[in-house]
Image (tube, rainbow over all chains, first blue to last red):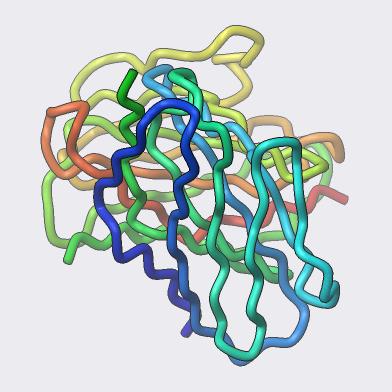
Length: 112
Length: 117
């Protein structure tokens, strides 16, 4: 069965610095997508970044980038130049054709 | 660990029929459950907050008469898509909190892929 593991329940970063959130997953499928979602207090799930498993190049979106290691089944999120507005819960997610799994989440605190 | 079971994992229905999706917290009680819908480009939209024993709170733009939510017990919330249309085809996901605190973690179901033909 597919599982997604986020081993860091909480992380803290100083404003303007860089932080990396970890995510590992387990699957036997070859075709899948990986996502990082940000959940602010509003409880909406905001897509931060996504990665197609067949792409070797790591996805980037402005200050957000991933380190996708397919063989190791690792998908970490790096946030550069952290801002106060980055404070939120971050969920790593895996999706295949008929299945979607989420990690337990990492609560990110940004210190001014 | 806390487990949320969502059923069915996938369903195909004809246009005009209704489909019920169940979300169960298997080993904990959840006074609050959340229903999300995944749109193209993979964004995940909060549809409604399901509250045990009371009416659900719907997000702006979500038709409450079309997406009926019933949270009859502390372990079960259901989402019924009424008079389904092809544009309702999507991935629906539920989540639940283990206790009433906003700081407690969310536990997600595995999602339901709905296809309306």
